[in-house]
Image 1: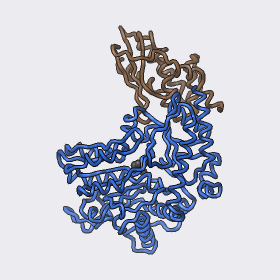
Image 2: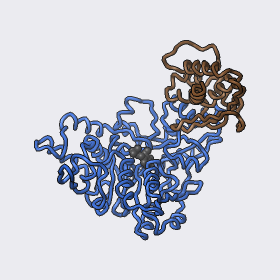
Image 3: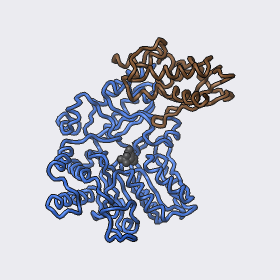
Image 4: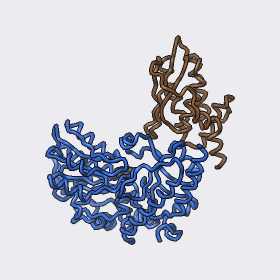
Length: 142
Length: 402
Ligand SMILES: Cc1ncc(COP(=O)(O)O)c(C=O)c1O
């Protein structure tokens, strides 16, 4: 197994892939979003419970590769309890982590684990799939 | 001799990537030096537009372009070279038939038949035609192993059926369909039938006259030729009867401001400047294949497929999708704990090129209740050592994801 791969599939990603955060359907949630990549077929449903501008909980369910699943799990874990504004800022931060033009490191280990995706251009969309879905939802709400 | 280092030398990609294990020939084949040289040579020494030039260079280019048409006709057993229409590929050829042949004769309540294992290229054009006319698209079922249900096919064929379109070899399941029988059954009810030969033409002997299919389509890039060139074979009577698909230069007999009459087939289907260099390259690709016995190619590729299946099945928690009785050198598989895209990324790091995804057969994935598979597909430059390497790497991936 080579180093680039080890870097990409760090323990953070493997851990979240195996035991994803809040991996269950919550049909009663206030908002349901879909993160879907028609090219590869990855598809997650995100269940957001939003009350008075605060994201009280995020659950998700669906099918995708280790990277898209782990990144959705990290998203759910990190956006819970945040205001819409804070959540939007975090979406931007995550995008920066995987942006090929950005070299600065992110302090959150769970975010920084995805930086290695830069070496695998074909896999960048796996990392950003759910983040983009949530970002456009938040932008619409603003 | 297939698959040996000497044989592989004919394909320059392997000199530029000495450790490349290319197992994605169902997507596109690698190109032999003779095809690359043939195209380069044409652009360097023979380039001119065809059909309209009087000068020597143009006449020679035209002659070469038309001589490839004869070559294609011989290659697939067409009676006459005028039954060979150049298109940009299989997709374009099927769209032409759906639009110009089927659409005008399709009415509300009519039926069109395709199988459950079609590539989107042989599904969507018919779907669109049916929607436009209020006709019904009927699906010929398959069993879980991936065998087409020929009995069900016979029952679905009816007086309402206006067209059958069937893939010869499934790019996802490897199934080789019983097209001769299917053509005969359709013809017993006077129903025209199109065969999508995208996956079969490179490796299997094709004789459209014996098969008696109404249309047959394939792409140059899947038979060691260039991209952007493909072929529609159509029976002369059909090609004569149907209207052009696109309009413009090079396809007319007479033109006034208000009206036009068209050239006979195949010219009336080749509007504008076509992919001339592509046609030239296709000619060299056919010459390349013609050096070999097609039956020997078919056997070699099939055996690679069987070998890969046998070895892959020794891996725990690996499932092969597509286990039809009659199948070719394509193997789709899934691992219990690793998603196909993760598998493909790992294999890519080992310089093994496979494909992961739905392979443009999304409804088929739904039938199996899976979103994607890993697919390894073989051609004449592959060998058993490459398969052993693939299997070893897949084992490692399985262990990594636990
Ligand atoms: C069975 C089948 N039909 C049709 C096609 C479409 O071929 P093309 O993309 O060359 O038009 C393919 C290739 O992907 C195929 O495998």
